[in-house]
Every structure is written in C-alpha cells, then in structure tokens.
Image (tube, rainbow over all chains, first blue to last red):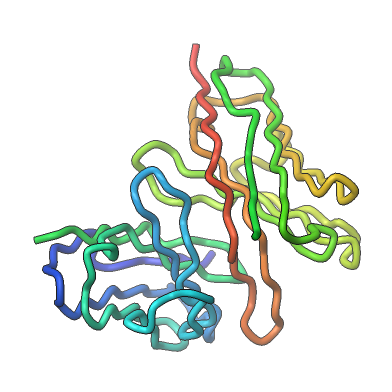
Length: 105
Length: 124
C-alpha cells in the first residue's frame, strides 16, 4: 500500500516568510497529488490539484511542484490567514498525509 | 453557490447505528462522484468512501476500516447523500464531511467542495 508522509509535522514561521512543506509517497504516484488547507473548526479547502494546478480563488502565492515520489507546497510570502494545517493527498488511493501544522512564530 | 450540508450526527452507543445526510445545492450530484471523509478529534483526514455517479453505475467504494459496516447511498432526485453507519465503534468518533469529487483522467480525483461536517460521538 502507498504511504504518504509529510514533513515537517509542524512548522513555525512569520508573516512574509517563504515556507515549503514536503510530501513523500512510498512509491511513484506520477503527478496525482493534491493539497488541502484546513483551519481549526473548519472544513478542508482544496488548494492545488495535480501537483500544481491552483483551485479557483486560491491566491497565487501558493504553488506546488514535484512528480513521482517527492512533492512540495510552497507559500511564497506568508499571510496571517495562511496559518493552518496542510494535507497532501494521493488522488487515486484517496490517502492523505498526516498533515503539517503551520503556526505563527 | 455550491453548498453541502451534513446532518444527523450525535451521540450513539458502541454497536449502535446512525445515518448521516448531506444535502447539496448549487450543482447536481447526478453528474458527480461524491466522497465522505472523516476526522477524529485532533487527528488527520481519513477517507471513508465514495459513490460514483449514474454514468458509472453508482459504484460504491469503502475504506477497509468501515467496509461491511458503513453503506453509502444517494438520491439524485433530492440531491442528497447518505451514510448509514452500523456496528459503530469508539474509533468511529469523528467529524464526518461530504465532498464533491472532480474526476479527470489526466489530473486524477480531487475534492473541490466540502460540507462543514457533522460530529459523530460513539461512547457508552
């Protein structure tokens, strides 16, 4: 079975920082990788699908890259509303990573 | 405006049953696959199951953790989804979300709209 592992599990950063979150698949998943953002008490929201396609309404400071087993989510300049938990997901197995909590430093 | 609204959550004893509903507006579920995803308190996201659309014979798929105990159904005429949960265990305690699935054979599957969730607590 495919395993999805995110790193780090948590991260502290400041407004304006550039932040990168990594997601690694235990075997190649081509570009079938999605990213979601979840704020406390709220439903997850789709950010990116197929590695790098921005969902409608998502700011361009969010970007994704990778293929095969290694993927990254980058936030180019953190905004206050970006502090949340981020999840990757392999789109065909439906498996989610364990999440990365992004906190204010 | 796309809206998904779950209901039916609550407190149930281990071994009991509960049925969740998801009322959808803003699009027709008949055209879409629909998923249920859950989140245990303080934990990550866990996919529960999927119901495909009529064009794909309404095929349902389940996570191993719920297969044989949970049943997904849909009523396209009322634009609603249902999650019947039987033989509930304490580890089924979670917020349950319904979500629309976008399917593209080039990009795969992704969940583009989610409900706000409904809490199911399994406890004696």
